[in-house]
Image: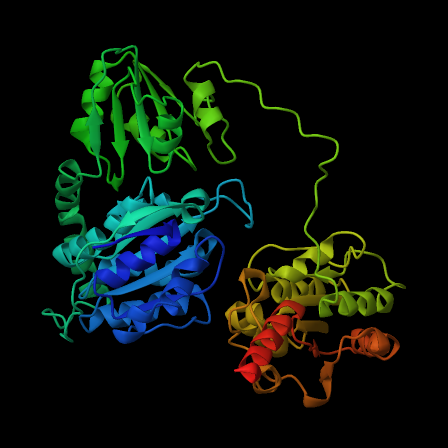
Length: 536
């Protein structure tokens, strides 16, 4: 098969296509978005009639994927690390239901929080769910592991977690494809009660999950993704997980590393290989991009007679992503100083695009709230979160998807009034609707501002599940029709919009304001396409 130059995300997508998936489910979130985007753009995926399309949130994506697995088809579900929090209910329980058709869950972690609220490590979810977890070190392994993941998913009848990080997701390398598998036929589970988690059955299923842990361990012990490389210098043994292997190799251009190395790509980690490293070497250095997952495991496996170095011990900082220089310093190598950044180069903090409709919404909202003390606007996750920065300083919180509405409600319940929630259109349908229902049920006097730019703008302009539905959703949830107000956020409408904000903020009930104007970036893209089509 031909070799392709692919992002890590794209290698995962191509691997899934070649593994014979019948569907892919996801919610956009950096650094996982390009997996679905690649399948969207794949002519091969279209010819194979692979189901594609963005889910409303990660939980619905996980559940839909589980449903496809139930009928015997292979399916891939993708999300960023914090999205796995949203999907956790279905994800954790899927380890007890097991899988029928192969089911692979990809979680893309974001060490250093390049575009995230935290840098949690999804390997903990794999350990929590007690399912096999794969962690590729490069793009070829990402492709190979996805295909292998479907094989062992069906072998053990269990979902498989694949964990990647930002650098792997968004860097390119050559990937050699292998012959593609055909899609599974529809076939219901052999055990008709497998997916029924009533307590009596769930207890049996959970006991089965515990019983097959030894099978997972034996598979990891013999896996080609867990390799032991011997070395003559036993003063130090090195454990490398996933992409950390690349950072280690970059410090040895000749690939001649004197220390024994245990390369981990499949969990649970191989105890025999780890025991050998521990017994042969004077000290152990653990290199892992994320939390000290393996370092903690080693400390629990062995009596602490030897020094275990890493993030937990302090040789490597606990926060942030790894890089070759950090690894080199941990090895005691002399790292050349980097050249200072010239004064000519200045940082360019992120900001709202010129002409963005959110600018005019924030200007009107700020003026409407000018007579009140600061700290009254609870916001959410999207490009509109940039309203926290100068010159707007219009929002005061950003915690998790959908939290703006319920946090504003909680503040109002405490007597903090007025309270305003700002949320985007896609985030509203992702996880804001239930919060608005709480507000309506309790008749909490808050104003909810749903910034509707008709797209999931922050992650590249994907289709929003909310488009064309917001007013009907709000009315169905119980918001009074006269207090569901649509605005056009343009400079010429500033005074009118400001007065509308002011009036609804003063209203002693639930109100929803929807500033609606197309995202400036997607509008420009749409106009270019329309112009090109006319020319054709």
